[in-house]
Image (cartoon, rainbow, N blue to C red; front, side, top):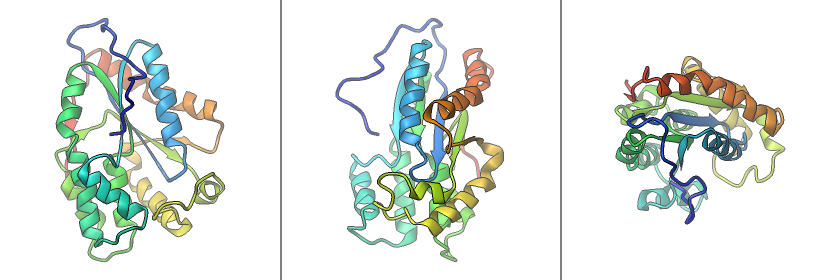
Amino acid sequence: MSTLSEDPWPWKEPKTIGQRGAFIVIEGLDRAGKTTQVKRLCDKLYSQGHNIKTLRFPDRTSPIGKMIDSYLQSQTEMDDHVIHLLFSANRWEKAKWMEETLKKGCTIVCDRYYHSGMVYSAAKHNPNLSLDWARAPDVGLPKPDAVIFLDLEPEEAEKRGGYGDEKYEKKEMQQRVRELFYTFESDMKVVNAGESLEIVGDHILEKIEETLKDVLEGRSRVGKFEA
């Protein structure tokens, strides 16, 4: 988790005691604008009275996260199965924190989660690393209330600043990742990330409005990711 020394969204006394927070995940291809939209969404929800915490996977600050960072920067090589399990372990490191934070009434907005973990590994065309194999280590993790997929053509992603800095930022890889994300289309709410920041942000809010209402009114419980 990337945290700041000064919390940009300090705790506010909730209007309803005992109400849990919502778990929102922002997914997408590299350079789709996830980090920007996570920040914008957190600011908006906080202004509406929600207590907010944010997560970003991989969490590169933990010992496991530092190993992942070295791999993504192409400083070390690892077997595809090994790095996949490290990505999963990195998420499991935060599982208890996520559950406790939601119970306290904080809404979590997460930059990437297990959908990214599964599709990026399966996109490597390793015949021994299928999508089914990739999902198994994440079974049991807290399940998001809503997953937003910021959809962007790989050709458009290439034009954005910083593209190509990390291991997976290659057009063929990104195209395969996009195809695999769409195998989970029923689990996600798709937003066109090629529009302006403001329009993309507005569409994200529209997509999660019903989810937030269900959580607020106690009609939704925190689930677990299932096989």
